[in-house]
Image 1 (tube, rainbow, N blue to C red):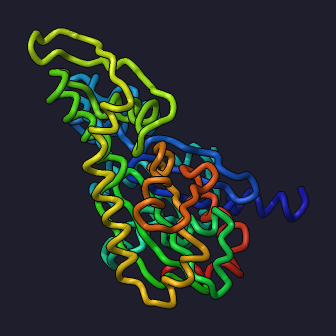
Image 2 (spheres, one colour; image 1 turned 90 degrees about the vertical axis):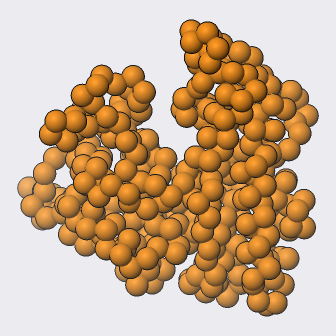
Image 3 (tube, one colour; image 1 turned 90 degrees about the horizontal axis):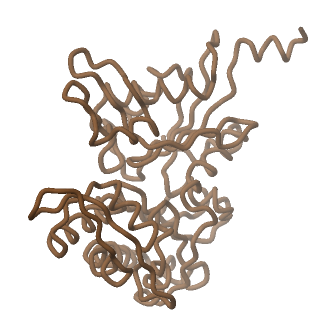
Length: 342
């Protein structure tokens, strides 16, 4: 065994983690993205033991026996259940590393830009509980900019809007630092809830949040489409109480999504109004970058561009932009750790 093999037996590869409200993604240094699973845990009621995590827990959500409960331990982008988060991260890290090491990995974790000191401590403690020997935190908007190859070390200003499951983050990046950051607790989850409420009110059908999410992905939009879309929604008839399926089209779902989309667009415009004249002038050249799962909604970029008069582009594979950027920091930590939160 040479010295490199010996060290690999002691030190694991370092990790980049996008700990999201809806999904957790993990990037391993030298390997890339190795995990992308729902941020959900199934626990036994009597002792809190973990029965399923991630994709398996999502599959049984809403179908669990009385002694089992499923929960999403993160809410609005931050940790709401410390114990469940620890168990979830531990499970994912063990799944990724596959074996024990004498010394834990370095972890770089993406967090909301306006995270409080208390919330920072909770995230760091969760990562340490999962075995990290050292933890760095990076703002999700900064990570998204790096993941989308924005030149963050240059002096130009760039606006990033990261629409995740629990929050919509707006950040302005300039010279490897965040010049402006605000967060809104309206994002993908609220879109799903809006669909649930619309279908209940207009179709007398009770559906689950994951069914609503599927509908949003399949036919959801923020602006009229050139080609109509339709899908079947399945749930429980509120009148008869029996299972039922109903056809819905993009126009209906667009009406359902309008309230949260309107809130998000107005939030972005309100953020633009708070910027300095110098940053505003820069954004006329650099525009707005959309990242996060919510950026995939059809017509959203065009809607924001129409209402802000700025060029809006969607990052390639927007769901993984944050973890890819966090991964770039892990790959070159000595140079890139300057972009992390202090």
